[in-house]
Image (cartoon, rainbow, N blue to C red; front, top):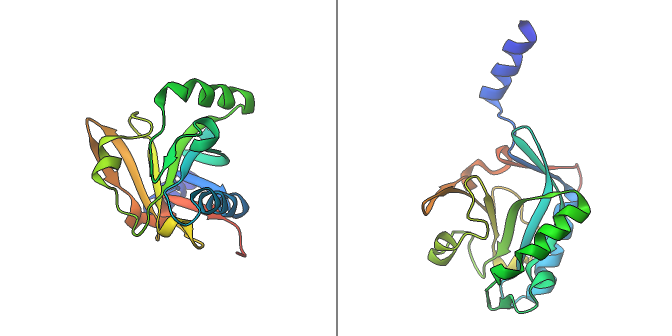
Length: 172
């Protein structure tokens, strides 16, 4: 019984993150976002991985424009009819869509367009927003983290930073 009490206490003090990835993977995602946006337009993609209990481990990035070549037009306009290609890639890799990520030209707040048009309108889906077209190394605490709750409602987890989204690794 002692180990269970210790686990519950740890969960209250330092809850398990909902999202986790390796630092190398996150650097790759930021580099892809920066290059695909060219410093002048929004870019984004789906974050794929595996769910392990209440925690999801991210391991693959599927850029929107790799599926829909016309998706990056300043703002992101992804053709939803191409989701069958996303699901095919998930099956091929044995992964699931866990979250999505996209850039903004300045801050990481959700726009009205973001709120009204979730990339995955499924309760619990997480949307990450990286500021300044991903022009640097942005970590949890300096990115937007939003959870879709259905019926147009969102929870802002941005202030939770790395207690919600943990990036593993020592050196950057």
